[in-house]
Length: 390
Image (cartoon, rainbow, N blue to C red; front, side, top):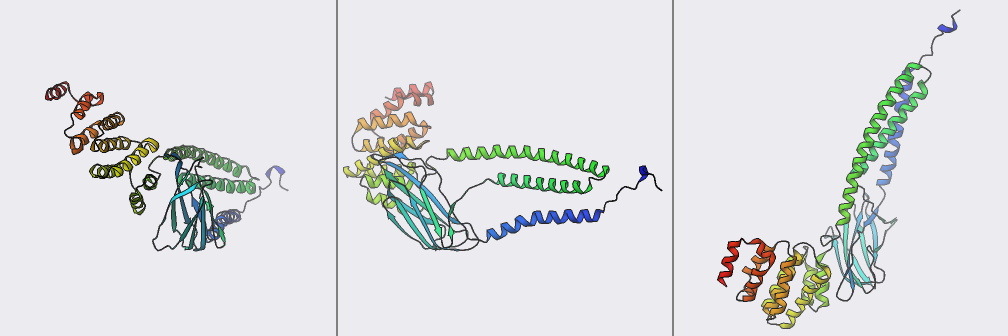
């Protein structure tokens, strides 16, 4: 009879263990993929509406809202209806831009809301809606959006960075590996040798998990930086400046200019449009037209206050209109403010030297010579020579 100390250890059937682990792995991977495949074939309507910053107009508060409607599914959506509402506001202007010119739509405005109807929206097709709203009260940073189609209700798109998706796959993969290892440990824990092997595998998995966790921390930092950068993009680059200029022109009686801005297919800029309007006003014999253009540029400068060099260029153009109208006091004041606020004083000086409107005016030369920021650009010898010319 065999001694108890020399009893034969139970043997493991490794092919059965391997097949069981493989089946469990296939189920764990194939199940979520099948669910995801079925969900992706359902119709899906989404919209995005970034926050905006209202600004004070001459008499009202004004804001531009952007809403993007998209079909993110793999089937066409019929009878799409989108309602965009700005509570308590008046809809001044609207601009609807389908990604494909063949997309048919109808729209209507009722008090504080816009209703857009699209007979059919194919997969990956989009519709961009720009809205200019005004009110004497407070304006929200985002509009209210209601979106639906036949058999589907639209939802707001939640944008996730690619780093977050990668992190989720890393964590899911690691947990899947840990689950397989844990199952094998349960089956093979009857032997010390297998338990020791599993301990080593678990240590390796922990080290891999720690490395992945460190990478995930770095990804989260990058994601936070991207979100902070996106939060700072609230200035003129996110707002459609055409709508702002169209609104101000219409308020001050420049109906033709307002319609021109709305018909443009490219984005307008305060810098270039102030140059165009000021040149037209300076050459026009119509004093009423000059006053209207001056009122529009005053509103852009005083209420919108665009960043960068644009503000200084608008002040320069106000000086140009004033000097063309014979109002030298206002021209002097506007040119002084343009030099004070300019990020590039040399550019303003070159404009003064090139533009015929400023030639032959002695006070212009005196202002440039005496301005402290202009003096910084000139050497002592150049200043002396300039003073000697008188």
